[in-house]
Length: 129
Image 1: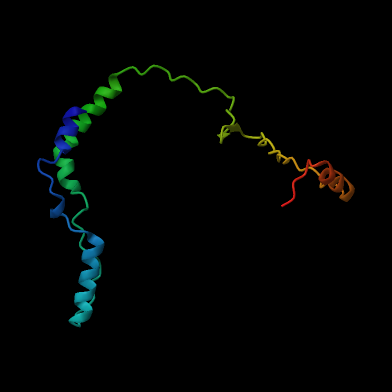
Image 2 (image 1 turned 180 degrees about the horizontal axis):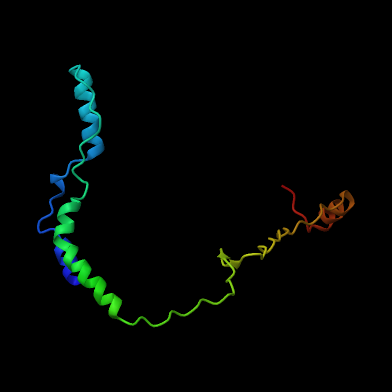
């Protein structure tokens, strides 16, 4: 397999050598409409792999690799268990409901009655502003 990977490796890859096909198609349409030329039928895409070249470089190696794989005894794969795991979402398993949030009550004491306020003022325990 290493030989196949080596055969497919490009010796020098320069990204600027491959123009953006969508952008080139846009420019070609603009040029045709501006110069009143015939509209092109399909875009020219230089990013499409050269399949013939790939086949010429790797066909014999791929065939050799296939025969080697056919000769190797592959151990039986372990059968997956029939039990399914429950999906986990946000730390909870599927089917479980999220715990209800309990509102914390603030300590609200009731306002004292008018009589209690008057008695507190007379005793001096309540300060007036």
